Length: 348
Image 1 (cartoon, rainbow, N blue to C red):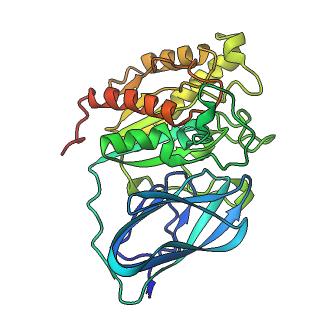
Image 2 (image 1 turned 120 degrees about the horizontal axis):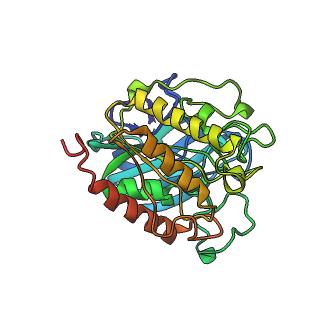
């Protein structure tokens, strides 16, 4: 039996393109669809738009994590589960990767006679994260490379479920919008994303579609999701192709970066007047001058709800991307920090 993808029993989370309600489009990592049903089997048909890496869809089916390879282009039919007898099932489908691909949900089908159960209550706590590959969980599953440089890969180790961002959200029982993109820096013209015509978070942050490989950029409606906490984890890729903050921390380029970082925080504050904004980088190795620049901007903002958090092993924990245990470490620290902020509305 066919299930319309705009049914109220289906719970979506993430910055998702819902302009065509019957065909939701997943762009950002950790974007998800959650549903519960009584029946024997479930399958979903999706259309993939491929840019790079080998694209994989994630799922948690009755508590067990699964992964499904996607065709580079066109449709993929995914059998989520199949059992001989009717029983209750809990399914979460989620985007493991960033805009290395976009995914359109085309059709959900359940075994004949199945019935959808009411959607679970959403968490009251809401988090939004602006970050790069670490926030997206890139290469997180390469656990034999803890503390080491990345292995050669084609995206198969990337999994937003194991990003520090989503782990922290689960620890806090919070909903998350993970606005994270591998290789991204703050400023256009820097970082790694869309080399050599680099696109920065200053362009991406207010978009739904943002990868020019897929066509026109589209704007996000910020009234659709109001977080109480915003994590800004930018500053890791900004040293490419020129590490000017290390070379000349008071130079013209460094001053420009700090000014634009301040503007970025003010833009977020304008969208979310009451949110707590926590600025940070990660355990991935980088020069401390970037953290010093972030600290300077946060102090000069003179906003009691903007803070700078430094992890215990900030910028020196690993030469490669964070693996699952390292992401757990970051998530635990971040969770403890947020729980001590006495955030208004967090527990209403």
